[in-house]
Image 1 (tube, rainbow, N blue to C red):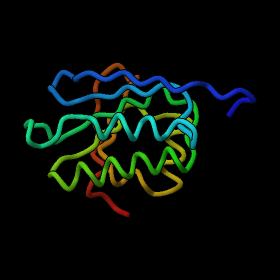
Image 2 (image 1 turned 90 degrees about the horizontal axis):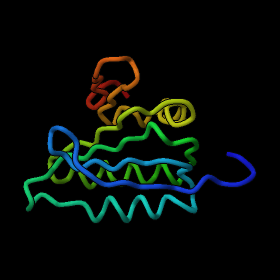
Image 3 (image 1 turned 90 degrees about the vertical axis):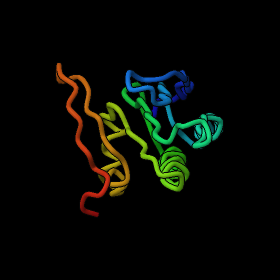
Image 4 (image 1 turned 45 degrees about the vertical axis):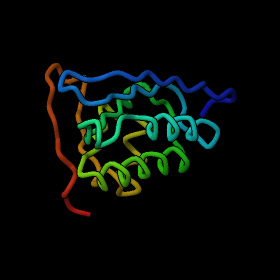
Length: 127
């Protein structure tokens, strides 16, 4: 994290499969994680036919425990309604915190930047 925190930017749309997709850019920290959590809670629910969510994390430059807690909370809510959370493009510090904490097994991880769309399912993997 730099001396001046990078603001958090959230863009909401849908991916090519019609799933809600939240693109996250900036630092995901105790000051910005509540905005992500609020945005994720506002996504369409199962009554709308939507159960899966995509979080594009390629633009995340920093993530602390509060950011991680927001991701875990999204996983729990989505799982209760029978869906999955896909983390698209986590790299650098974001990928390290997912691995070090063992949390990446809760999510489907979609790699980006390889020239092809390779999907690696971590959900249901080893703890």
